[in-house]
Picture 1 (cartoon, helix red, strand yellow):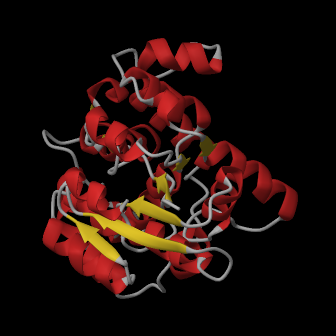
Picture 2 (tube, one colour):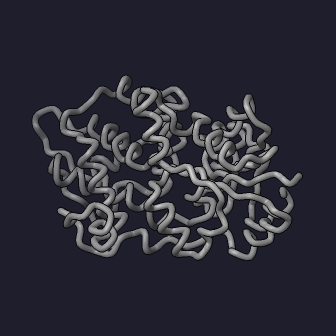
Picture 3 (cartoon, one colour):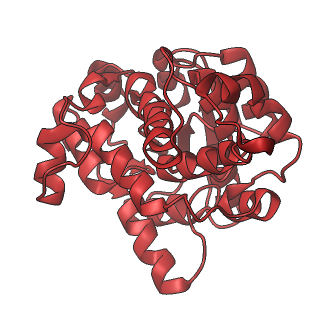
Length: 305
């Protein structure tokens, strides 16, 4: 029997470097300016490479968590002796994400980062999330989802810059013979369905586990169930009801979630190197996470069916 495929969306099916990744970068700058008074420079404080390095801490698969964690990190540089006002240029000079990675357990997550750096009362998770959503969704989709006017951003959302990474014809070829597809993503249900419908591939997927389902299960259980926990992988696999699975992801947390699920189901993990700004760095990270397969092109998925 052919195995079923479980897909992450971001960095696997959809190129999010100009959307989610840049939304993280812009949200951090905007929050630092509005709340801490750090004037923004001509260029964004964080590079895309900085964001990728931060996500390699593990436990930051959710981009709202990433924004919070990065704000917590930068806040440690804002208490300057003598009352000197810290600028974006100063923060750019101080930042060293690779050095931070050496100081934290992996996977890290918010709780471990707070234990290391301490909490900051000026960093409000709900506000950071709202700013991110305004930047990512834009005015039209923000109004549609939240039924209110965005407070800070009235421009077109970065979601409109997303591009497909896997051609539809490749997915259709994989579906031949009755292969079933599932989605395991940190996106909200609204954002997952929006982008898959936008690219005309939503109907190809038979089961979905999104941030919404994981958040609901976390509230009920009192546990942290987001990746690298295998909860979302196991839930999607159960919904598909197949005998074996392949989970395709772009981050070590994806691979660890699939590998942890091996105790319960027959599943292999596949890390993707396409759509990466630094494929050499990600190759090392995915290998360290013990990916069963690494692929450089979407067409290589056909060989794994």
